[in-house]
Amino acid sequence: MIDIDIFDKVPLFSLLDTEERQVLAQQVSTRHFGKGETIFHASDPGGFAYIVQAGLVHVIQDYIVIDVVDPGGLFGMSSLLAETPHLSTAVAIEDTQAIEIDRNDLKILLTKKPMAGLNMMTMVEKHMRTTNALMRTLVTRNPNEVIDDTESFGEKAADAVARFGGSWGFVILFLAILVVYVSLNIFFKNTWDPYPFILLNLFLSMLAAIQAPVIIMSQNRMDAHDRLRDELEYHTNLKGELEIEEILQRVGRLEKEILDQKPKQNPDPV
Image 1 (cartoon, rainbow, N blue to C red):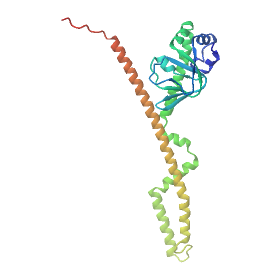
Image 2 (image 1 turned 90 degrees about the vertical axis):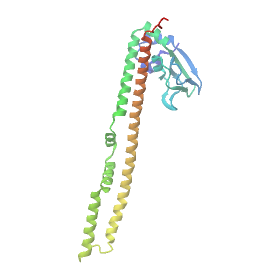
Image 3 (image 1 turned 180 degrees about the horizontal axis):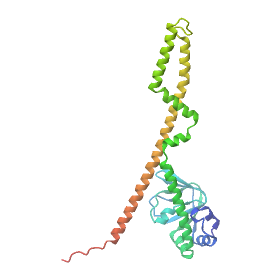
């Protein structure tokens, strides 16, 4: 008999009462997978879902680990409910013991305890809302707003100095100051920095020593800004790809339903 407390850790079954969990526990079975064993491959029929009791499972899609399932975690349920092939591959990273669930187990549960279906639908809807909110957060963020929120006062000051130092206003102002400074020390008798303007060279060296690292700081910030924009663009493209895939699947299902409902035409008698 499976310990029904394991269902407390699974969001999909967390609203089931004790009797409903006992009914489900009586139907499901336990499987053991050795370290490195593949539980299912992408494109395999989605006949089973699994709850990890002990061990660790990686869910992989396109050579990327998209989910790490530890004890109490559930995987394979979306393909089971939709009766579609798996979109990912599940591999046991450690010796893993898992509860195996099929559609018949859920059918028996819903037959004996119809209210369990409402509780499961509630959790599915909460999960979908959380996912949609997360996707909106990832995609709709304005890079400029994110940058402004994360920048410190020093980083903003460095950007301002670099922005002013690279403008025509700075060039014209700097030339004007140099002309006035040199003119005063050439044409007036009581000068404080006569030719070759040693004091001026000292000031220019100090200015360059301060300005150079500030500009480098600003350039580093620009690199970070570019990486952030690339990340947000990636999430935007990923969401677009998922939406296109979903639309294509829906169109395919509609096309199949239309073809199934279309009456077959009898051939004309000869």
